[in-house]
Length: 162
View 1 (cartoon, rainbow, N blue to C red):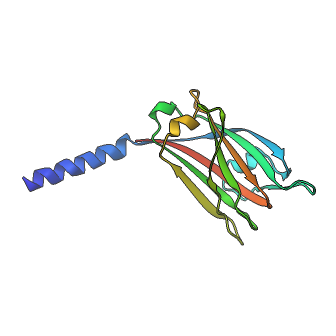
View 2: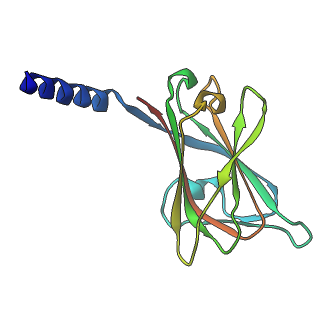
View 3: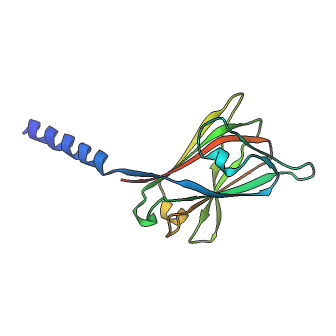
């Protein structure tokens, strides 16, 4: 009986691993709303040391930019969103915000911790109400705001269906 139960558990774990599906979002647009930027959205697609830099302007206290990702799938089938940022900030903690398609506004998710001196990664995993942040067409809008110089090498977004 114990052997049969072990085989059943192993079989269920194997099936759940096979059934999980991850989709990687594709960066389709980027817009700098406040601040001075060097680089383009193409610099954020791969972790290849082609860096995107943004900082506040001289008489502005902060910067803000948005990035839109496609190909994340049906929002009703997504159980988790993973957002990975690779970069560096000298001080402060830029804020990560996601567009809520139900409330039609950006929602503050958390601060981004990218301590120096080199490039480091920050991963945010969302499990709760993720369907609100992905449109019916599979789009995700990310907004990052901050008060210090931010250097990014990559923004990677994945939707996970378990």
